[in-house]
Image 1 (cartoon, rainbow, N blue to C red):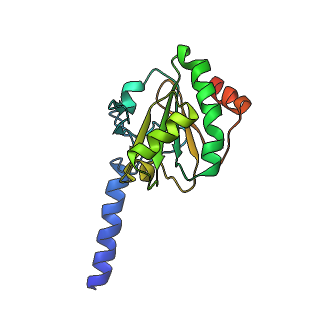
Image 2: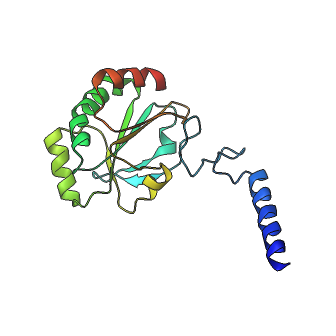
Length: 176
């Protein structure tokens, strides 16, 4: 009898949570979800860049954004960086923002800075040392990129790489 009551209680609690909006989707009050999903508002994060600037995703609303999760040890990540650098240079005057999120990387900050100098990175790089942001964005392979439109909605997710200049041009049109 107790186990039946416990099961019914658990079902009732789950139903209340779902009806009250705790399903991970954006709440009616405009709050951001805690899990990334195409077609939904992108989860909020705030990370310090390697140049010391605080990067807050919600402050970028109104601009097309590409979030690229990468690591120094990842071959396809290294291969696509030149295309990311070119896309950022090409579209930054239209408000385009690229954020490189260094993820699952044992390199020191100085090791990442060396990588940045060698690849001529011209956009902010942040480190997700505790993997909190990576969990929200469901990163299960590198590189992974999210394309977010001007209203803060995720329009596409790309796992694997390297991405080409032509592909990035098409994605920019989609989020601009």
